[in-house]
Amino acid sequence: MGRQDQIINERMKKLNALKAAGINPYPNRFEVKHTAQELQDKYKSLKNNEARKDKLKLAGRLMSFRNFGKIAFGVLQDHSGKIQIQIQSDKTPEKTQKFIKDFVDTGDIIGIEGTPLRTERGELSVLINTATMLTKSLLPLPEKWHGLQDEEERYRKRYLDTTINKEVKTVFETRAKMLSIMRTFMDEKGFIEIETPLLQTVYGGALAEPFITHINAYDTDVFLSIAPELPLKKALVGGFNKVYEITKKFRNEGADRSHNPEHMTIEWYQSYADYNDGMDLVEELIKKLAKEVLGKQTITYQGHKIDLRKWKRITLADAIQEHLGEDVSKIRTDDDAKKIAEKYNINPEEITKSNIQDELMKLFREKLIQPTFLIDYPLESSPLAKPKESDPTKAEVFQPFIGGLEIARAYSELNDPKLQEEHFKEQEEEREKGTKETMPTDSDFVTALQQGMPPACGVGIGIERLVMLFTDNASIRDVILFPFMRPLHSKNKKGGEM
Image (cartoon, rainbow, N blue to C red; front, side, top):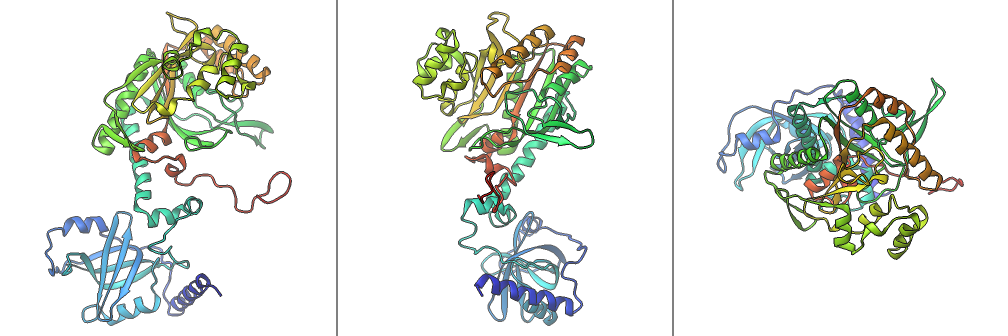
């Protein structure tokens, strides 16, 4: 029997002993009156060797325990932080001492009642009077000094990762705070939060491959939403002036450090606005997030110092010229685009004149460290965007980049139903050429536009990438609490295990 099995056996014996003694190892409730952080704050003026008679009641997971005979120390961790707990043989009731000795292990969740003191070494502690078993843990915690070293195990057992590694838990607390700030920001700007379907009969709003599923009740194949754009714009048709949604998107594509098939977005649509208004609002939101989350508007991401107070705006064509030395105005045909693709070792099979600029941008986007808006994309690459009045071959599109991360994609929204229908047809033609990332025709959306949609700007921001930026994480999996993991014993299509 291995050491792990021995530990589990010992804990099972204690579990059975608790039950035999008439003690419920998983009681329904425990009234918590204090948290670790509240006590740290309340008693920060307590001097070394000073004690109080205040009655304290708290609960948490026992992270460590050391017995030195007449005195024993433990560390109790709750959602707010950690605090030391203490047993003194001449002050802690013998019944409590015996209970802890006989039944309690590290990893158990226990309730503590006691009084505050500060040790000779200056550590705030709770002198235990009574202890209550709240959850008997049957598995040991990872070793203190080794913890969870394997990255895959950290993702699979995130509940342990956040228990052992405070900095990991902080990432997700930061994420939650950012979402709260975003909602408040949008509400204060006069936007209304609405909900759009995740199951759709026609996928749209982005150039991406969808997930397909089936509704048995209607015997109908449907798609998981790749973007909430089209339903949100229908809301503008219906008389809503400013709308937003924080929701999940699903894209059946590759996964890498900045892409995950399931991810979260905030999308908003503002009537009587264009992409200049959108850029202003994105800039304002990100500055507000930085100020309220980090307390400053200069940040460090992966070793780069970034000033969020200064934003550059440059056309996509000028950026390609600046970084690659290519004059994209010379790309007039699909053959021209394929030749350029071959020059940069880009697979030419799916390259057309409509998508080559986006592919070239991917070659240098990681160099866009300081806040930068790339603007004015080829009209063919943006089937839902409005053409520039000064140059109808370009669309009023912008993408902000920070720290080499693409933060959003946005544009002045196309509201000409005839032109929208033509763009959908062009997308179908692109798909026939072999281009996978195209948008199917949504006749219902065209009908909505025929009813009349006001001029508008729409913005879609990737939540995870913003969290990556604000928590200095290089991988999107580190900012998703439970990232998708391939099953440990899954089978591939040929029947073999993976």
